[in-house]
Image 1: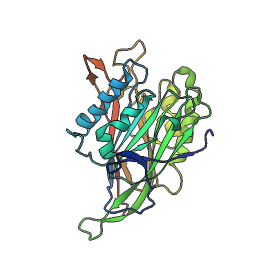
Image 2: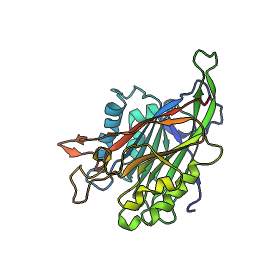
Image 3: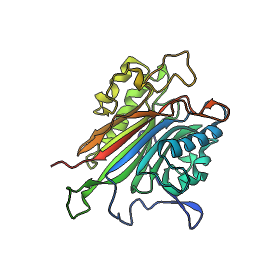
Image 4: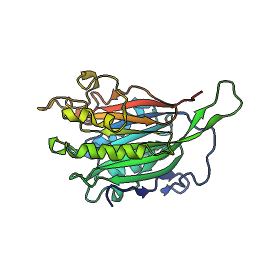
Length: 309
């Protein structure tokens, strides 16, 4: 089915059974205290360059150690969500066998079979075990010629209680986080606005406190700068599309095409929400004998549920 949510089940690794198992989608209840903030990272990990397995391994090591400061696999990161795009079919299982991922994350999807039919690469979302995942689904874009989709997870976060209050929180809210890779190249310009609209509608459902989408938006044309705003999404980047400090592609290696801000974090809030301006990661990141991990930089931001007095 295309343009219709297709339910998925998130999986977490059972250290007791030594295997991945489906989560309960919060069916067993939620234990407080829950986090009120999370760190959000998005990174197109590049399926097309050589050695996709080695590069994905190097990318996971970089995320673990350089972004989250976890020196060993047993160190758990702060509450976080990691959005990966262009994970190669050949490399996908490396995520599931990664010890840090096993120890610290819930994973969506559980296998490449859940990607759009015929996909040779796709999106993978990792959610910190500290954050309850209460639902997951994918929307395969009917107008895509490149097997593109939006991958969604619903999570629970806490509204912070007033300072010195005896209670743990002022309530629990549901947020939705989308991971996407919009249609590529100039010929994808007609498809991208509709794909963005589908994502925005899912993030703006009435029972949600708010939503975010991160990923490779392939914003290569002048019209791409407006499509998020036209569907009610706010860009977390506060500069202009022409500011080089925001560019995320075109340097690793230098390209015949102009460098640009292809990757973005966009958001919508119905309740109190703050999204910090993202910073770039993966700048200059290499592996082996000096090869680039990815042709894209990643982005990382902090997201805070806030009280509305």
